[in-house]
Length: 155
Image (cartoon, rainbow, N blue to C red; front, side, top):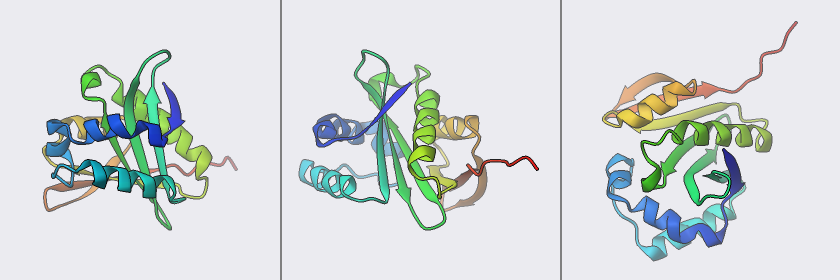
């Protein structure tokens, strides 16, 4: 799986993916966004050094997924959204794994990654546990997951 940073030119399909009915149903913010809201958000996100926006794609193909990291002081929160046409085709795990690798190179000091997933989102629960995340709390129909990227040092 290949990755690259998101650019302004990616706005249109990220907007379509964000407003896909399944995406809306599984998002923590289950409201569609307008084009203006989306482009304003993207502009701010691209200029925010505490955000890392990654696009995943296969060689010679259109993008298959989008991974966002919001970096906080002691951790980063991750979320993923797939191109609706690529769901169920085995690309999510490869996309998330590649994005985590890219994140490790960009933000070496943030080693704890957290994710929040709706209890009913079975696909995301399988995805995150499949790449090594563990759940640590359930609150208000949201499951909280974490992954420690701290490298192990041999003594």
